[in-house]
Image 1 (tube, rainbow, N blue to C red):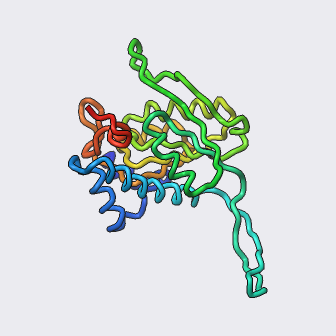
Image 2 (image 1 turned 180 degrees about the vertical axis):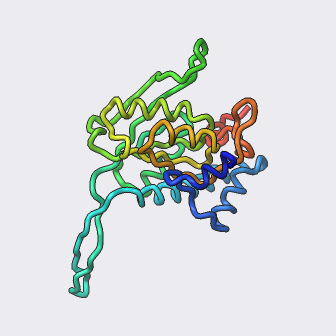
Image 3 (image 1 turned 45 degrees about the vertical axis):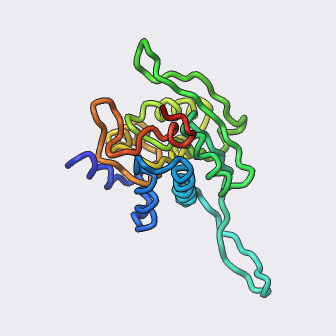
Length: 222
């Protein structure tokens, strides 16, 4: 069984419904000729879809309300509080999408880069909400290749007291290798992604991918 097939069938790896709308949006942001303005606009649309889908995995409790017609309605309400944590710099592009859906949401930041001596991901900066251990965490990073940075960030969250089952990793595109490695390392983690790609090249870039998401989003391409 190929890694892609394994990833597609994994119970804790949730891919957005592959609708014509989503495929059209992903086609635009994957196109190397797409202008930055369009790249940002359509990426933001996909990010909002991802955040909305991520909220489906939060617990709810039954709640009864009275409608303007004076009739009771049996609904639900979210149980517990959430926060976002973006992996700098590309993950910061997803913060507004989270704020658009969850008003006044608290957002932490983590900077992780590869140590040139050890080639391992290293924590350089972390600023998290003080009560993060009591919250559900939406971890934000648009691209999941090897998963090294994301797994290091999850370790930071666990050390801060966050329960593993309360971490939802939200991303646009992932490689099957990276996703499966993360899910094996963290058996209670959930991943929500827009598309699972074919794999990575020798330099560990996702294929077919979309290039460097952060550079394209923030306009810092060479």
